Length: 248
Image (cartoon, rainbow, N blue to C red):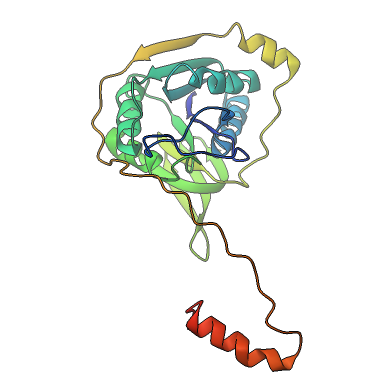
């Protein structure tokens, strides 16, 4: 079985982000980058699928040379090959999906795994856009997956509950937290990853359908106030909620 997993290189969620001087991108100075957390679930599921059905796992990432670090992490976990679709400038979700679709159509994979969203921009649409461009089915937010021959049965999270969906292969699956527990890369895997191939491909300049006008940090929260310690404070609390907080 030919399995592809798409990964992104994102700032660590514990990093204190600063906005750059142009107010359109973050200041990369001092920022630690990691594999997108949701993509780790995608990598793990790809590896589990290979262990069950055989074949190979190809890791694909769109970005610059720094993305190789994330590709190496997936290779250390057990993926077979890495591909860097080298972009000269940042792409929006449409551009990333177009770059992926134009490359992936050459491999005709049986199944493509992605994280349900990337924690840098949180658009959560790359999987669906890529599936539309490739003409494939897509099941998003998957928390349980079963593959039986050419049939896929997936349980996915929806507003207020879950639903079970069936589809055939080939397909794109976007992984949600809870699908599995990603494995740690072993020392043997880390050493082996250094010898595994990362193929670089320079991609076309894809158009962006969205533009970042300005990044603004949220306002600092105001300190809390104690308006009283007994029932006599209820009236003042109601007044403050109505006149200052304006919650009703």
